[in-house]
Length: 208
Image (spheres, rainbow, N blue to C red):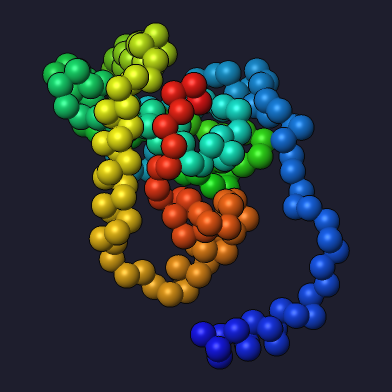
């Protein structure tokens, strides 16, 4: 550590600090609120695969990293058991897999917006019925909206425990990747959360 600190001091100490806060673009709201983004686009893939992706542009969520509301929603959307979207679509032989979520950094989450996507891998039969597949996805999201968050916190606490276990028992990563990840976290989280802010759930706030 002493050697690393010496190197960092030598290499970076000459970079001037202008004393300015980091730039924020939170005044640029609704960047996707244009006719071009309110459309269905068909793209011919190189691989022989059918994929339906539905994308929503939401208000910025990075301030809620201790709650992780999009992680909670993606957990529900991506559930594969009885009563799930994927279970229903598989019974129809329309889908093979489903994923919903947000990358929590970069293009998918920043001070202007947050992206939330649901991607369904379709069968050949599912491709013929992709409008119905989209309708099912929207119905499920509407149901979640009507029911609201789980008031007993059971689902949220289950996610919290799983993420905590994965954090405590994670495999050792490449040091360079680890440092890069920490440097990114330093731009996003409070000091006490640099090591854990991108992985752990800290607070249950149903209103968020």
